[in-house]
Image (cartoon, rainbow over all chains, first blue to last red):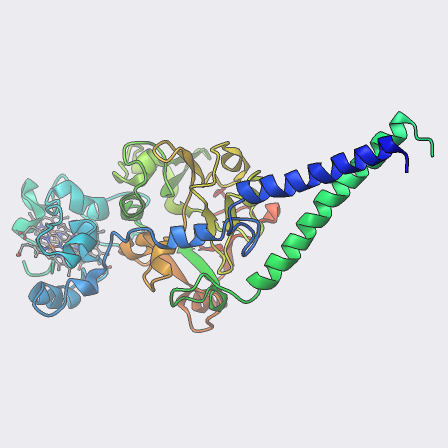
Length: 149
Length: 256
């Protein structure tokens, strides 16, 4: 073999080894584990913090059993506690951490109940101007059981 | 042996390219044979699930609690106009004009700013990432920082994303946004951290009227399958061939 060819082949082999070496340094270990992405990232995504605990964890023994049992039998049973009370997983894990106080304004109930043209007609809606004489809704309705009146 | 400069360059490039290609092929064969058996583990086997989502637009009351819960659960910058899920209001006026809006993604609800007499029909349409089977955002990502999991969820690798925003351009549904806090692209994960623990996505749990339904397409008894088997369903922009896994009941022709 001619010497200049030999030199080139050696150069190519070095380039190839360098390529494989640098690639193994740069590309993370779990890349390509499941597909063309970093497999570890799936775990990262799974390990994010949960914020909403779910209503059933409010109703556990020694917790808000009474409110829960009233609520379960009410027209508001589809309105989960944390819709009004905010994400409370931290509170469930540690009762010293209190959730934000619930929004008691007329506007908050109105997000669901004020009359709106685009709402399905069979959903219970009220005229914000006339209904309830501008009093807080909770003055007449119990938010945990709206027909307590 | 005599070799011209051109000849030499040609062979040289062939050898380099050949070596690079074959090494990646070998590597992918090796890793794929591993991947065939394993799942990320932790008491959850992603081979047993394929998640799906149904939106019943006929039930939506536009309260926006879904969009609000999503932002809080996933720490989406609250005061910026970016949303992983939002609710659109469609109003077809009597003169034929169609008005579409979504003030603050519906988080503060909707005000009636057009007199009822002028409206022919009006309805709300919740929107969310479609977790397409053939996802344009995954195809355009230059670094493999977004991908579809085995259980059918399109996720972002926040450590690997270089923030080039290609995927945001590529998504035909406008479901992606740039997260200025993380400095990466971001999107709905169907609350992957919740569904892999047996919880519902935050938006589904927040819906007071059951307009959002989530479940396992591999389970014939799941709530989504019961609806898919019974109702007349459609997806958004079916002509694009992205094969969305968010199915709509009661979709109007005006909805895009």
